[in-house]
Length: 279
Image 1 (cartoon, rainbow, N blue to C red):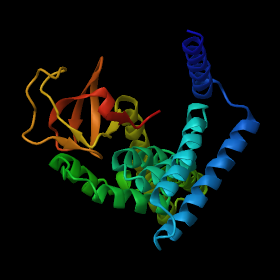
Image 2 (cartoon, one colour):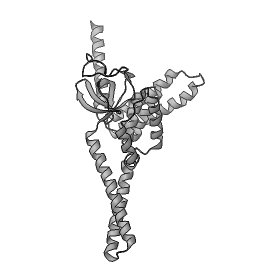
Image 3 (tube, rainbow, N blue to C red):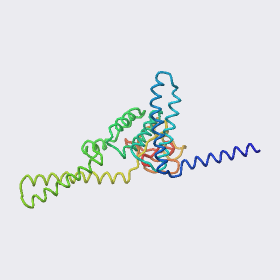
Image 4 (cartoon, helix red, strand yellow):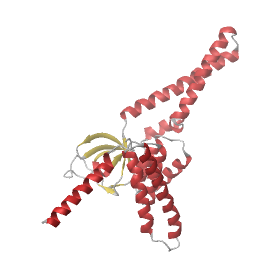
């Protein structure tokens, strides 16, 4: 009885320690220490992975270091530290652990903070190329991205800068016209106004889209999509979906998510098989 009581007490203490680790806010010192430890473990894993390629180090040792690094990065996120570098590093770790779905969802999160990062673009593109499912975008989306390329190819930061430049140019030419109505000033005013409205419209459309658009990624290796919010419903497709599939969230209902795939098809998937990009 005493032994059983001791084990129960020990489990209770461990549970409370784990709960505290997961929920308590972090001090600035703790944030610095966790980030430093995460970086050290990650770089040790990289160094060891080079050694393991020669057969001198077991891959399990590399995985252990990666998981230690991952645990600290994710603790930082739970503690409120959310930036492009953190999510990019988490994505890299999941990629090295062979978890394509969680690698992609964290690269997507990193995109929200640094969409112009060339390393992020390259890693995300490579991770996407490894997905088992090839789901094409709707034809409408393809046409929009072709005709309004500046809206999709340029980041919001770049478009904001260009908006400011043309806004300043518009008022500069407007002032010039007040004193001297030259054809050059008129052309400058017209061009500035055109691009000013173009980028302003793009930024407003993006803000509207983001306000009502929740995206996510399937993270389980295999997911049976259903026609309703229960395992009793028939599968939506002949083949299951796989990790890394992007989707738009339509509705969340208990343990099930109603989602729309990139090609416009809709289905229900278990909530635990997916992660939402926005945290």
